[in-house]
Image (cartoon, rainbow, N blue to C red):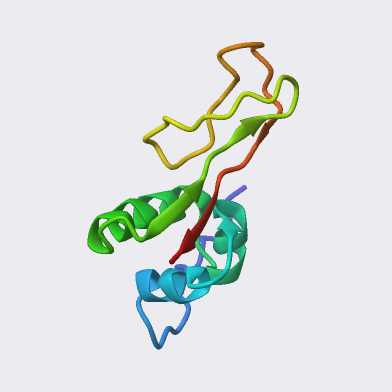
Length: 104
């Protein structure tokens, strides 16, 4: 049996670039990568890539609320990466609150 060829994915019509949309969402609002992904319509990994570029372009105006472990309360304050860590270095728990982002 042959399957139907998949139709090409048509990108969403945008009036702004993806990064401008993310910047406008984050100005004055605290959102996680999952929240941004749902509102902009791209994957979470793409959001993190865009946030890296936004952090460089805005010269430290991007404020990151660090992730924290729900089991022991460890906070990942010194973490440079913007994504969520896999597990806590103290208790090895995987129950970690997602980091959130905002622009001052």
